[in-house]
Length: 77
Image (cartoon, rainbow, N blue to C red; front, side):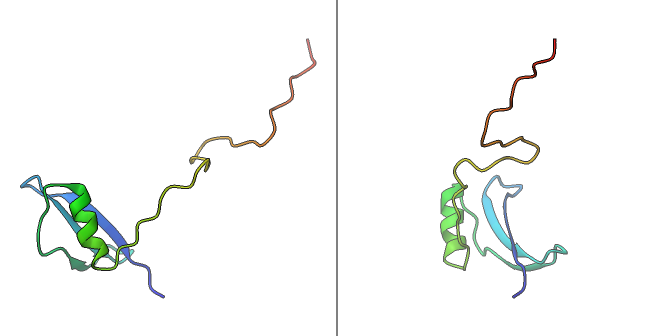
């Protein structure tokens, strides 16, 4: 299975477009139309194979400290 990167961007005409790219940024396919709304662009991409995944609830962000238990207070004085 090859990796495909989906890119959503606004062109110089301020309209949304989508592309599929290789990890090396070679364009594999792109929208034939442009869209005034991001949602319309995503819908068109979905018709071409894009799968939207919601963000995971309570997922730790990069660089954050995610702990299931509170840190113990130091008893030193």
